[in-house]
Length: 78
Image 1 (cartoon, rainbow, N blue to C red):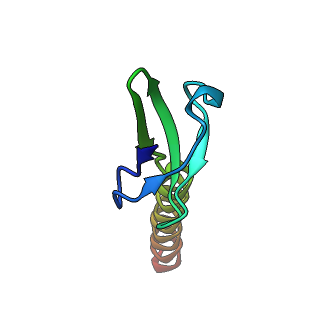
Image 2 (image 1 turned 30 degrees about the vertical axis):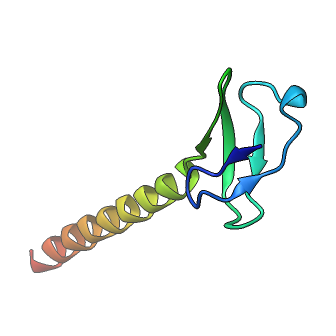
């Protein structure tokens, strides 16, 4: 048995069926966990890279729109 690194709940898994890099989830907190090492068995929380990338794209698009609007305003003044 291994503990969730986020909520410390016991996770009942067959340790001999796991491979390094496998993903499992915690029944208590619902976190997605990766098997970081087998000996000793260690789990680490998965990072949400997709969410961070989506946020960055959103902010980049907003900045780009503002610049285009400013350029159009400058053209109208001429």
